[in-house]
Image (cartoon, rainbow, N blue to C red; front, side):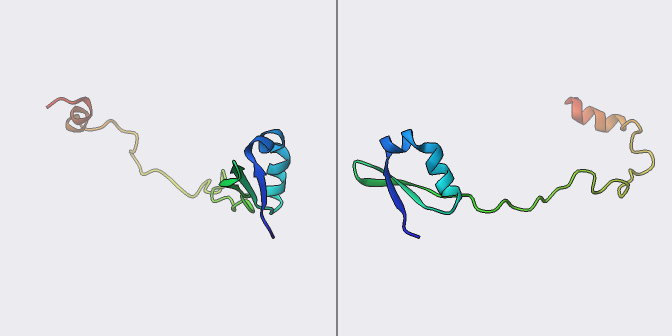
Length: 82
């Protein structure tokens, strides 16, 4: 598909239309004073979601005693005491 060249001033006036054209696969070249300066292209299909909320529910269990207080020497390291 041939790229469409549009002057920046015209692109400002028709930006929503140009975005839709790019989303539909057309390549739009933005030019200033007749010289190409940027290319407007669509993002393509949305990537598959890698994370699904709740997918791991019930699969992970904390070890016994995970919420017990930390030893004093560890607390001192967090607090900056030596």
